[in-house]
Amino acid sequence: MKSAWRQAATIEADEIDDLMNSGWSVQVVGRARHVYDQAEVSDVFERLSDPWAPGTRP
Image 1 (cartoon, rainbow, N blue to C red):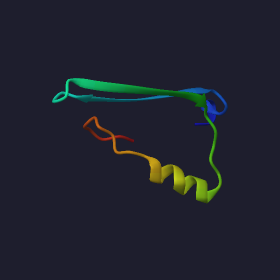
Image 2 (cartoon, rainbow, N blue to C red):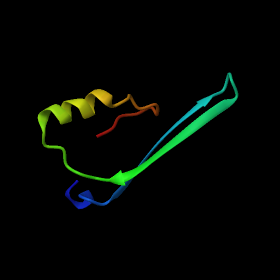
Image 3 (cartoon, rainbow, N blue to C red):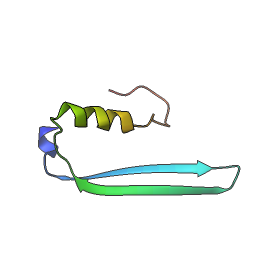
């Protein structure tokens, strides 16, 4: 992650509702940074959602 420090970062989340025939997409652009404060680290991990795509991740 050192190479990403202060570089532009983009995150995208999508959802498609086949039953309602609708969907949405959100893109967030910002700068990557390290999080050192333990309370902030805990807050970040509590806000993470489970991935929708199947498979294992590193």
